[in-house]
Image: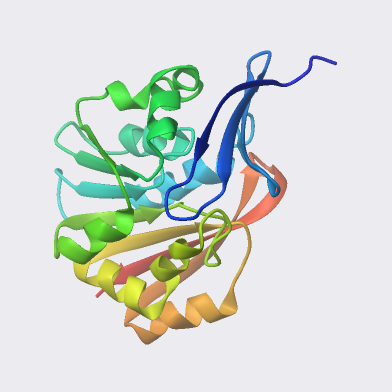
Length: 224
């Protein structure tokens, strides 16, 4: 069997763990030390579904503005770009600068180098800062910054899924805008928080890899 080769490592800011990028032949893996694999270049169906389901629900015209929290391996970004028009703007917030560098380098080919698209703007920093400071700015917000509503890579991510964080996301959306959240599994208390804030919510179960693999959860919450 071909062994995994460590290409690079990076610390997650804000008392997070250490990310490591591995390669085996044409396969890539991002792992967090002590907690296992976060993502794999061969398993990205649910990340693409996050973007496809969101874009199918856009209602505010031909020039939508999207915010993607968490670049990952670029699959959600690439899928979003395929489902919006030439006038769209997509802002990507990525906390770990090394992840952006990896996507411009060895990971880029996995999702066909979406960062090169002129519709894309990358902001290296915490997506929570954008949510707190930009009101009524986005037609859709896609969050895939952790393992779901409970922070795994970084405890500060818990704020995003709290009442305060979801309220900030609500205010950052335009009327009829959509907040889409990826999770490794269901979370009834999170669903209730969304509804408490006035979101109209759909909960969708998707497969990690086509029609196979683990079942992941996507919440699609519309601001009414």
